[in-house]
Length: 68
Image 1 (spheres, rainbow, N blue to C red):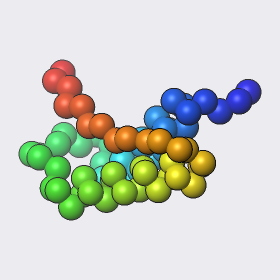
Image 2 (cartoon, rainbow, N blue to C red; image 1 turned 90 degrees about the horizontal axis):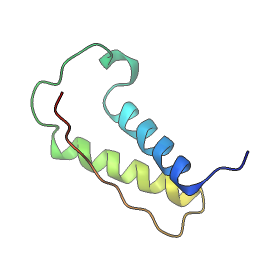
Image 3 (tube, rainbow, N blue to C red; image 1 turned 180 degrees about the horizontal axis):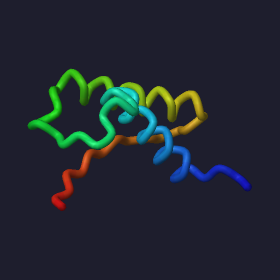
Image 4 (cartoon, one colour; image 1 turned 135 degrees about the horizontal axis):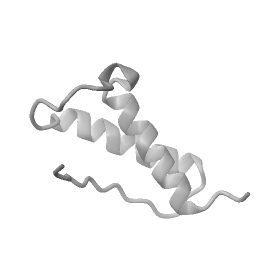
């Protein structure tokens, strides 16, 4: 099975977000307001660094807020 760009970026972004937000310590908790800019900057830089390490020639990071 070959790794596609979409799969790689999705997985690396999810991993970076999970790490930046506290990993498994946040499971089952409800968000308590907006995410601080410093945390978002960290997530973006980790995701882009991961894409660069993977050899991506282009990558972007997008945040989508979904209501439940």
